Length: 168
Image (cartoon, rainbow, N blue to C red):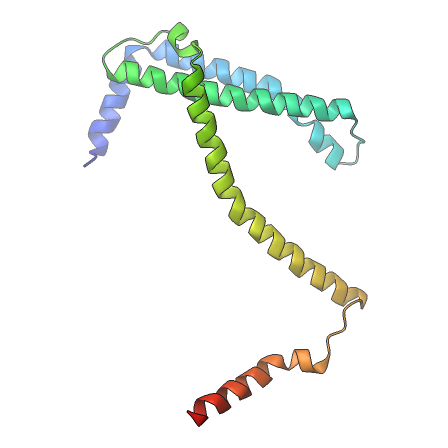
């Protein structure tokens, strides 16, 4: 069983072993993300009506890739530092910044897996919504005519099921 009070106490004790390393590392990662943000907003400018060129898309993709890499790298460093601090060591900023390819790959693959799992229901909901909006648009434009038989289909099905249930 997990005792929340003990976990918070252990976490605070671990943080207190090297608070400046953790804070400077978090600020550094946040600063890099803030620097990448304007490049990622190129696509939003296009959504407002500005024309987007190939260079805008290239900058967006580069910034998005760099942002993802910084996020994964940041997670690896924080987890490494937390493990060190929980083991009684004093993690340094250099140990937090150290590149670890296999750990980065594991975090990246977990991110890809989670993104895939979460995107499937989202795509299904978007497809259903797009279908409903398409039918509504066709009905509004007169491109789809619903006959009285289709509109009365639920009533007809209910009558048929009532007859089948009464015959058995």
